[in-house]
Length: 456
Image (cartoon, rainbow, N blue to C red; front, side, top):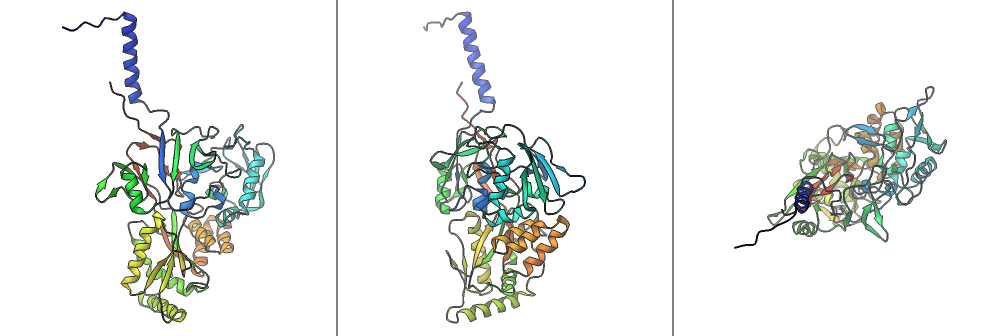
């Protein structure tokens, strides 16, 4: 016969309180969700947004950096300002904005008007996407009119939302930003919460950015829970892991950039022939390529003409081995599937093609656009293709004129524009609050991981 358990009234109330607390903890969101281990999209990852070009560069930058404004479901939010910017009544190209007080970068330096002006000045001499975004402003178009007062001079009326939400112009002080995370000291692949983030602390305790890896290796790591996400899918040899499919808007601009001395170099006719042969990619479903309106009409008249023009160019260059060499960076998860379909399309029309790591006739790229509009996507691709003058002209034009300019400059150039892919990341079940923005960057500000429910 067992001995009865006796306890005082106070002890009984204490035990009851502990039980209620355990049940409450199981039903409430946990303030800190532990670590999230993410795979890199490709083997390159600059930490400064003004130097990033590819989708592989851009997707993690939202974790570290923020712009003056952000586009959320088609509407602009001015999270760093006391209110919306105001236009001068006599001059709609002159805009004034007021920064919120007390904000700092992740390294503790103040985020004041001088710091914003310096960040924009540094971006003007950085990568092609940042320079084209700066083209939407007049020269020296950002100045500090006071400790928290900014004056902006736009190149044309109506460009304010585009320039202040362009991710290549995210505010930085070196590599220090305003995002919910910051690199751990001495370990840039480990991101820890930025206690000074203007939007507040994220739920996650840290994010680990793993190096890019081959498809099967990444899927194996996801299946065995060495990674919490995968760009490649969720199954390896039929073994699946419960997951959530996180899909963004079509964002990465995919196409072929001409390389010096290749068959496309300085020859728009050959570029249009290549584009005609690859046009079935635009109607594909996986990955999803260009929505209507991104790629202007006017490609080669027929498939037969395109095949003939391309074969003739390859024969002239190398009569002994007339093949098309397309370069791509190995390990890019977004481009691997596109490259396989490119080879299949050329096989179907009996044009020999070879995928090489570098020094090809053209390079397959997935470029992160300046903004969400089709015209700015074309401008992004022109800029990275080396046509910064025409790309800047598109960026500086009023919104009503951009589409026509983008179509004209693209048709006269040598870049081969295929469309936009939709980024898709498989996250293990229990990860909540993650999403992509309209330029394909991953947002984790309110992401968290489920914790096991405590046993009763």
